[in-house]
Length: 558
Image (cartoon, rainbow, N blue to C red; front, side, top):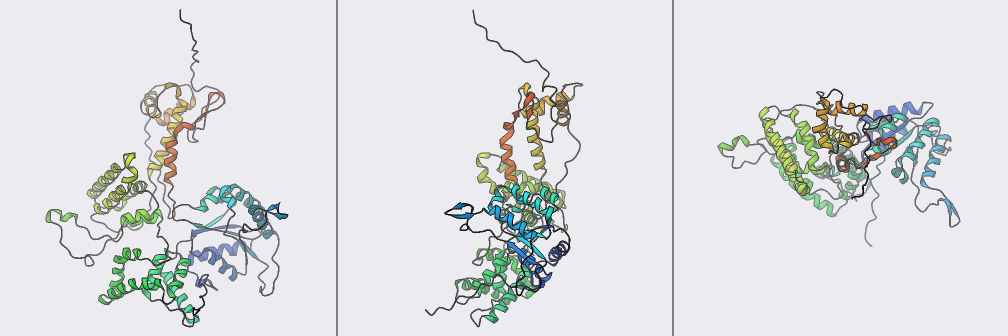
């Protein structure tokens, strides 16, 4: 009694034209050009839209479909209460997989029914899939088989929308691997999180429109509250609009909590100009993160951006730093301006262990230094960080200290940091070397098993000696392996570029390393199976060794 009726949700925010989308214009043009080409073609193609949640993927497809005169037929997973194909309690039922297959093939074969108010848009259509049956996550091959049949008979464009996770658990790479995309000709467009400036414009427009229609029940938040909502949403426009609705309601705890941040920023703005206030805002980033708005998302960083925050680290200007007692004269060369980022927080938000994060820093830090002495000092810090995690008994505890020493050591060592512009980042060579090491150990143990040596001893002691002999072995596989491992190659490893949304999956490689060559099986003819594809395979006409079998007989003692 006495309570006002609840306000309708602001999300989904009704969009009518593509100009209202909070998406970069180039991304909208890419999607629009693809839809124009494949909606008019004889065969419909397949488009894969990826990106974090709330970046405008679905809204872009729906708005562009309306503008291009296409009807979007969207698949939604049936609820568990719906019947299955087999009979249960006298009702016929079907699985989600069967229903999805029938929906895709029927939507591709039959036209939509003309309904009143359609406006003549039923002749052309687009199939939209954003919710996948659970079976595809367990058996992605079943999805690939359906797509192969669709490509042969497809007449309308098919759009898949997959939201990526910042932790690296990307469903797009699992459901749509690179081989399937190349085989079926799937086009892929990746969306980025919504930019803060774009999100501010959208939130301002939404709050103004809704406040005018609410008859006084909603108030328009000021600029400081909107900035806090933007920083707490991490580029998710859906989350930002949901938080905007709560912050716009009067007499809410959220508004009071945001008011503390607003008062602090207002008092700060009275002392400085608007230009200086933007510079000061970076100093309050950590405080705002601690008092983030209710409903804000956990801030996460892709590995590419996390490395950039360390390698392209920004420091506060001398006038902005608090004046305090300076360092003694003999330590004055260690003076640095205050950091604008927290290195430990960057590593935590990258969703990667500190030990592997140090590998990426070690691979890329040299290009960002201008003095040789600084590189020498930085390498010492990286060595100290590696020493902290060398003991496996304390690695889980010391890993955080190791990443702190590595990141802060690199930042402190770069005494004359200059702007180097854009520099491509690369994956650590350690990944290729470690993979090659595991393959060589597996091959050495299988090809030279009769020498009764460990894989490491075979590669460091026996094979270098056999490489100096004229005819060390008769088996071609052994000869090729000796030539590959017994001599130090002069070729350099090819660097693999790190993309802007590369997932962190190094832990899987380390687990494979622990397994070792225990899975080697012996096939027919005495030849070991399971050798890596990069290693030469032994021929079946010759045995692994040309030695005669030893027959051990038991003799009765006198």
